[in-house]
Amino acid sequence: MKNEKPVLDYSVKIRKVDDILYAVKRNNAWEINDVTKEMMRRCNGEKTIVEIAEEIAEFYKTDKKEVLMDCEKIFGYFIQEKLLILT
Image (tube, rainbow, N blue to C red; front, top):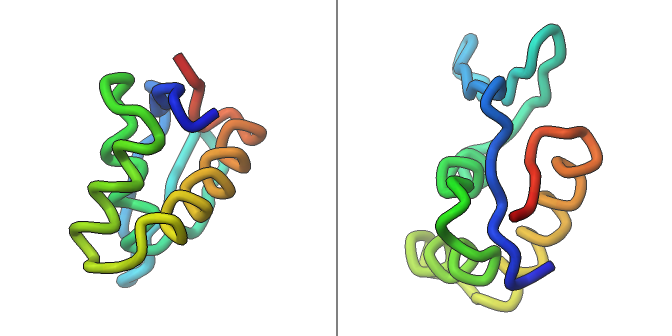
């Protein structure tokens, strides 16, 4: 999974309501945080999961391995929920 390139489903939008971020797809919404928003924003089919994790780790000045594990977990969940696909 690490070398695959995630793509956000075309129908997913990120919305902010009352200072809370949501990933919205049709009639469903998932509450997300700023880090997850940054992860999702990079899911354009051009970057691998490893590259996204490295960018996030650099952006937030944190451990790359920990961020990679978080990315894999979050992306795995979003794939199950059909918010992302891997190319």
